Amino acid sequence: MSEKEEIRDLFLRYGIEMPRRFRRNEKDAFCNAAGKEFQKNGYPVKAIAGTYKVRAVDVAANDLKNAENIVIANYDTPMHNFGNPFAYYPLNGPSSVKASTLPYYTPQIICMLIAIFFIFAYVGKIDFPHVLSSQ
Image 1 (cartoon, rainbow, N blue to C red):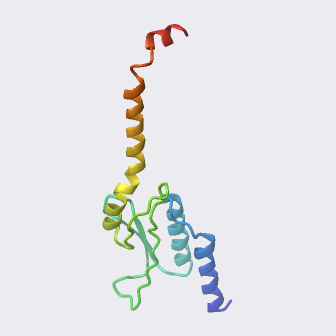
Image 2 (cartoon, rainbow, N blue to C red; image 1 turned 45 degrees about the vertical axis):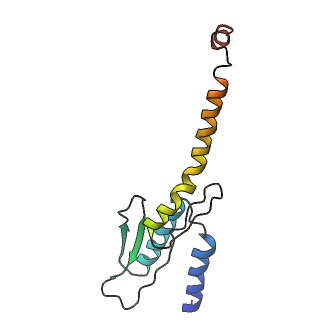
């Protein structure tokens, strides 16, 4: 297999077979597959865990300190929560987390406010002793 065919196969594998990396298990599967591919080609591989509030894992192949070229493939795609868009900052986890906080929690806050409204609106109108005694 020529080098061009091999590169094309890698693009197909990681761009078409594993295109989504929204959920944690998809991101982990991508890291595992990329790490195995690098090891198969003879590169030493190590995982670098993030230290911020969000669990992030990066895959580093070969020696980064002595590398002539560094290739970075961004896979920290943002989560999708009810279609809420938010500003996304590639390779900048803290900024992405700050930008996603309000869109992430907004649906939960709205549901909680609706539940509180129904509790206050209907709790006084339900005859609990009558409902419990009819069972």
